[in-house]
Length: 306
Ligand code: AMP
Image 1 (cartoon, helix red, strand yellow):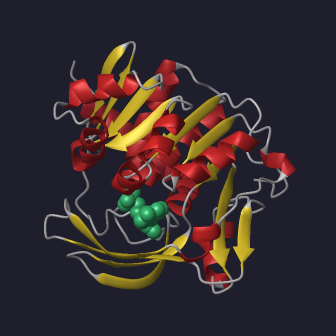
Image 2 (cartoon, protein in one colour; image 1 turned 120 degrees about the horizontal axis):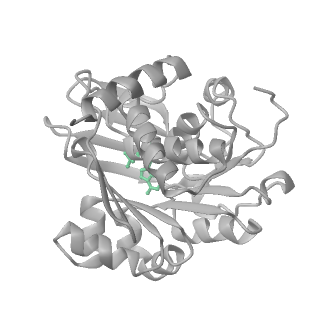
């Protein structure tokens, strides 16, 4: 892919250094952040442009990883100070995770300024980051065709108003089960999905981890199981990998068609299933588009009921 091609998908989110402990292993100082996972995943289908910030301590080896995925880095700012850091530990079943520390560092004063080549990009993924930053990026993009956004519990707690006004501006909201209950106050997922549709998006993509995903729209509900994985090493970033793959597929097709959204979800599931087989972007760095197509084919076979 040409390095000078302008991005077909803009992704804003965190870029950071994680320390993660799962029942499989403990890995300190590994490349993480919602934008890192999402851009790497999208890069199998299109050229993503990363919007984020890192500190002057951000190692050259991490930049090389981004380059190996052909991510456009013109929108990645380098500021004096330390890079965002996060650490977490998983319980035995890998379903529950405890955050041990979050240090926003250079993200605390981040003021995203989009390069000119990003401003006309029709496809945008606002990966998990403070809703004020998601708004700031969206404000700079002229007439986007499709805006996808993700969020997390923290923002529902501390920036609810900004998050609700952001949700009204997006086409597809991706959110997990517990966050959707937290946001709407509704326990039943069908009620929660419908309540979120009334907040503005045409689609709600509900992520249920190893139990798959549910898409709510005016056409009703579409269900997808997760691709079953035996080598589960680290589920961190699975949601970002899922949504990044989905956004990348749609940007590649330049489509917002409902049937393409469903196919994009299936590719997102396949990408996420690879991502969790190792820590950080390690597994995504080993696979090719052919591996993705092969797994997609076996996934479709598993889904066939007649
Ligand atoms: P996920 O597993 O989808 O929650 O994504 C994990 C990634 O999100 C990790 O690589 C973290 O660096 C990043 N992360 C953790 N907390 C935050 C936060 N408050 N804002 C943005 N990104 C975060």
